[in-house]
Length: 413
Image 1: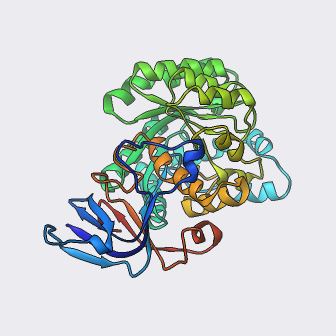
Image 2: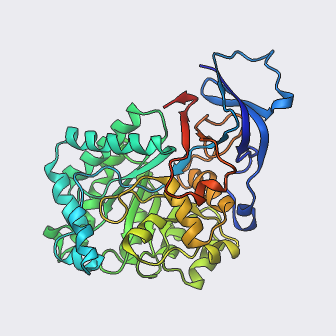
């Protein structure tokens, strides 16, 4: 279906095809057109411009949407989620209110191990149904591209089950879905004193994952008490040998050299970054291919420090934003809240936050050639806002649903 959106108050994030991401001072700029239109043909952006220049004589239009003074922008690109999980961890939420730390809950058998037990007990169909509902909610909230990790299985059967659910979501929904193998998320109880043995098991899964094309990326939780830098390098090397690109958890609670390990193995992104040393920023400045990703909803939920976005962007780095949607530390897929929190708590400007959640998020998923901006030839994955005064209102009114319509490949969702 060919679609024409007219009378757009402001069309945000207009980019030339050559722009794949933005960094430093560039993040403060959000190119736009006021009083604009967008023409969508066969699911892609065919043309856009000023209403005063609209000429429909060469267009084949099946449907017209009169935006009536609303803002149109690219859909959110959520590059870090764990939405395939079973049940929830609401009791741990209460435990934290009562004073237990994330680490204390994990030592009591909670945390990732709690989710792993529930997931291992769930059937693939049950897991798919729960995950499908989460994905549909995220789409309604404006997410039009998403990365999903395994990591709550912690044994070969359950990890493969998760990856198969991700592939099923990918087949059944039109938005881009990228899969990440995160077998090294935590040590299961059976391997509590045998980390090398567990890594052997994780690595032994790689041939099957590669053969069945179950994942695009490989991930590991590089953190004290979980997996070391040496463990990280070992796994990333093995993953690369099976065609999996690194996207890794680093610097959430401690900076132990995970950023440098990710860069060494050409990681597409390094994610979390709540604890950042000067040498970590300097290393990322020398590694233009690796996107830093901040997860402010996790910091909000756990009451831990926020990624020092201001320091990183002012140093010249790019930054992406993602939800970290998971049952234990960020049980929400609402990218609108993430953008607001980045502005409120991380002192990012609205322009920086929107760039981080669209074009830079697309880069962190490896899809910035086709998504993340208003560019001729890119997918028409779009948000039409409700009638608001300006795009500043999006992060300002953090608790309000401001989305009017969501389109994926030019189709209303």
